[in-house]
Image (cartoon, rainbow, N blue to C red; front, top):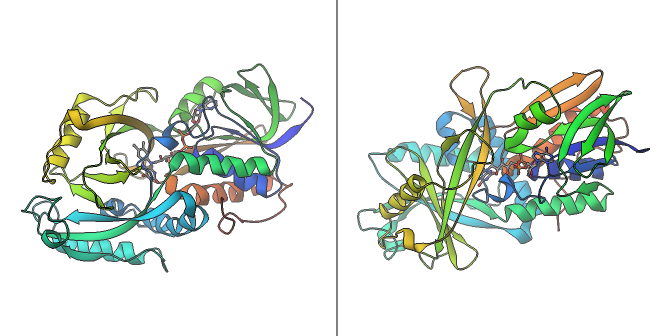
Amino acid sequence: MSKIFDLFIIGGGINGAGIARDAAGRGLSVCLADKGEIGGATSSWSTKLIHGGLRYLENYEFKLVRESLKEREIVYKIAKPISKPMPFIIPYVDKIRPAWLIKIGLFLYDNLGGKSNIPKSKTLNLRKNFPNILQEKYKIGFQYFDIQIDDKELTKLNIKDAKRNKAKILEYNKVKKAEIIDNKWIIHLQNGKKIASKVLINASGPWINETLKKNIKLKSNKKIRLVKGSHIITKKLYKDDVAFTFQNNDKRIIFVIPYKKKFSLIGTTEVEVKSPENKEISKIEIKYLINSVNNYLKKKISTKDIVDTYSGIRPLIEDFNTATKVTRDYVFDLNIIKDLPLLNIYGGKLTTYRKLSEKVLLDLKEYLPNTKKGPWTDKKKLL
Ligand SMILES: Cc1cc2nc3c(=O)[nH]c(=O)nc-3n(C[C@H](O)[C@H](O)[C@H](O)COP(=O)(O)OP(=O)(O)OC[C@H]3O[C@@H](n4cnc5c(N)ncnc54)[C@H](O)[C@@H]3O)c2cc1C
């Protein structure tokens, strides 16, 4: 164990992978370990969208939507071969959201992120444009665009680039313990090896507080809620290369998105859970998703149409200003323990991983004197 790394990252989801890529590209020595497959957890159970998050505007999360829209532009540019713009149609239902509200939302969505290469929103005649897909009662729709991406591949490409810049990546190797000995972090791995590092980053997604408590033996400063989101996959429900955003009576929305040429991806739900391991879709969630589709599409679906399902768990941080509000944004929790930094990364979106990684390196600048250059990942393509 003679080498001392600049940075050790727990977790090879999109956040850990993005930080590893950015740091290694700046000349830092990086080691990352994941207890499973790289990108095999939350970062492959997402809705697979690089999006501003139109619905977050309703919660006044303008900062998050603005940053996400800017990142949508950049991630699309650097990861074009694994992403594509996808039109989304919101059928208008006056009782759920008035047209003026949706129009204001879409105006903000078109403009908050600044200059964009992604087409702007517009109003559509649904009977004329999608007569065979939607029920007759839906006459008007609003179209906007987001980016569909291969989430797991995005994570793997970040790791590939980190490796190219000499990062050490360890898969299927759980971090069992991290402690400070002789002015450095000593990380104990499942395979019995020990790694030394100056900086420790905990990017273990929904396991964040579990990692802190069980493996680093520290109490968390932040309260999180674990929220399960589930998807069902059916055979392609219609031919057109278009996605739908269906509004439910409970004001939640679900997406129906063309998926891997032959399928439709339908999600998602939101169910609070106790453990990050508990990630099976429930019968209630399946019913909720099926009902939602059947409220809109002409051709009804049932459980028989389901070919696969998957669920993921988000750690949502309770906002510190208001006790009840949870935010979709990411939050950093930097602790200096015996002069050594430990950065815990809470929450986030696939969409904002690159900016998050940049901010990590900015916040840790004084602890990383070997940094050779500034931000670079917005220009260099991933493949
Ligand atoms: C249902 C759902 C849909 C979503 N859809 C979208 C979307 O469409 N667009 C979007 O932008 N965002 C979306 N998100 C959010 C996005 O998926 C997450 O923000 C992102 O994947 C989180 O990445 P992460 O690296 O923090 O976590 P993860 O991908 O979970 O990575 C954490 C890693 O840490 C590892 N780990 C844990 N403990 C240890 C340990 N002790 N030692 C070593 N390794 C450990 C795990 O194995 C795991 O691989 C969605 C989230 C959910 C749940």
